Length: 353
Image (spheres, rainbow, N blue to C red):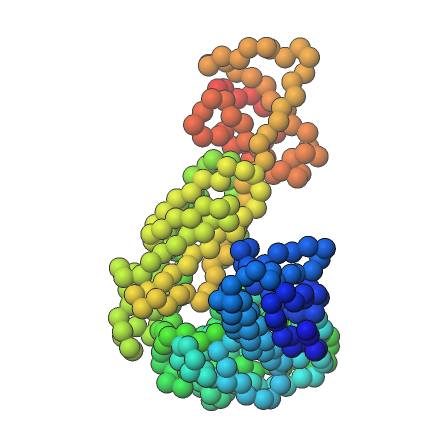
């Protein structure tokens, strides 16, 4: 029997699936038929009590997580979701100025962590994070320090004894956007860990925001380091005691500060480097190194082309200008370990194999 969202379960009772938001099913204890759930009359009372207890605990845990909108009200919680003033489905407004402080409720860790799926702000609007209970604390970062739309993690550091995190948002009157959503969590006291991509071979172009262009199965070498701006405050940090995990975006994972990888399939990829220090604290930034793997070339030979080409022969190659405009670098494979890269070659040229 159900009244609103509260139900009393008895042996042999039936529950309409739409009447309760969360269910846990034990196959040995529950039978489903005709879109309804029947609790068998032959079940031992122990199964009934177990099912009811777990169901209630699960429902309470799901309902306890709250949504918090951006405003001037402080929050003391270690769970829930933090949204802009527009909530889950709307945009924030013009000419907003809000300051919100998050503090741990002591149920898990001591320091607040906000895990953003992405931040979407209109030009001129900014979201900033302070390492403390107010804006007088150290400024950690602002939204324009990150790539638009990329996931980010912001958390109170070990230097912050309060464990609180203060968020300040300002929008002008020139347009709005979808804003943000962030999962609220509490973690152990952590010193800042930052992942750095030092060098790659081949190199990215341009070096700060560019792509690494390669052929399929061409090996790329990566060199990474960690930065520890709060090293020694509460504990010691170094690359020797930090775990390096590389995620190549194609399902490949590698460990260690120096690594290499080959991409089998043409397309675009993002490479990320994640660090975990000796205290289990994770890096809070993303390197977002972009990889562009060229499509495999196709050739069409004229009808009178030589059918057999041998080592030492010289052949004449031509290209269609419209095709080259889309693919400024041409790659030719002649049984070599590495491709012969012909960049901007003339309409007719001769090349030896």
